Image (cartoon, rainbow, N blue to C red; front, top):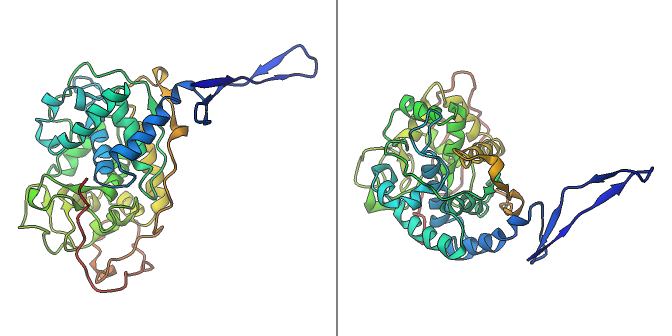
Length: 356
């Protein structure tokens, strides 16, 4: 399947040689640092074609979501699961019964047989899969990606995944227990740029959190700062607050993070800087995917993760009919600029993410 290429450099004296790390050439011609990554190239391609259908769509979004829900079953103090180990699939009868994991059964139904057919662990199909999923979303970073996880041996307990109706203090405490700072929590919320809701209000499934759910851009951070005026469905549901655009769904927790003094400045900085948002998300996501894992026992296969296409809009913009006066700014140390443009045209409803 692959061949090794080993190079050495003879020094002038002819007595010594400096060994260069072995490289491997895979059957498709790809040169990798570790031969074990070769077997993940066809897995990567099958994920793109068969699971994600080549798009930053519902299945890509759901795979990023399950990566968080799987990994956050972890505590530095112990007793809350073994982190990024695939327990969400291995113990699906247990973990999918938790209210916070509602709706994840569909992507489990796709990823479990895929992992079985390709002979990889459930932890790898989730966390390798999430990196591949992100590569289909313009503007997303390449996340450092390791493979070689063993299958989970225990289920994570209930209560490890924060709910959107939890107060900021409670969410930050749960995330700190898993090893994340408040800035890292906000960075992880960049995943909401490509996300949508299904279970809070089932009648309007696939309602996105911003107006550009196929782009890993900073619109979600800007639009959550806009004053909410209405609900996209039949009224308020637990975990939901008013949004500024027809068809757009706003999580209570997102609105709270944008307006809490501990997180508002980081939130605003991401609204104004897509590159910073993507970079910080990539770092935090790489950390998340290693929770509970011994990196020394894994193989870094980041080099086979494709690079996402450039984001369509490098700078956030006000949707049509929105303006600076509608921003509910909460950062006390950073003024909100008056330089953002407003989208031309009439106000339109934000469309739902297509079903897959």
